Length: 245
Image (tube, rainbow, N blue to C red; front, side, top):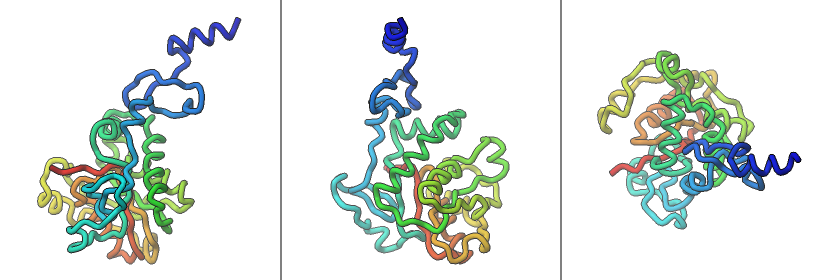
């Protein structure tokens, strides 16, 4: 008697899970049963590993092309060595991150962490001595309730089996959101907004973690701050890279 009931419930979607992005009913049976995404959303989150600049993530080539430094990074390298990211900040990825940050969709936490780990593993990321999240100012943290960069960094620290330096970087100024500004205004807005603890970062190679790379202004300021505090080097991981028009 139980089997027909379970079969009917499955057909009606009563035993199925919901996609973490679109909310569509997804099949929880078989090999993909543990995945939090429906097939359509999973397909819309491709992992980008080629046709990109390994320093800034600019996507200018075919996806099957090997990573190659862009002219800008050859002429003026960023203050880090490698940048890892999962994909473009658009479509499903953009909705996933925005819902997580601004609409209390904290249940997406594990999924976003897994996307960060997959991006790092796919490019055979250099194992750091420690992982550092880009911090929020205390006022912003109280307003949002969590730091999305810290939550992603937790997954990376577990994956690499390395310490998570929650206080490696501190945001000392509550700057206006970077989304309000263009490139030059972003650089001025974020300048001097962070301090690093030399006791935590000195002589360590660090993996700096954030959610989205837009112009790179925040990440550059963070990396420079860490280097001034004596770290041995910095790599960067973000979930998504914006393609600027």
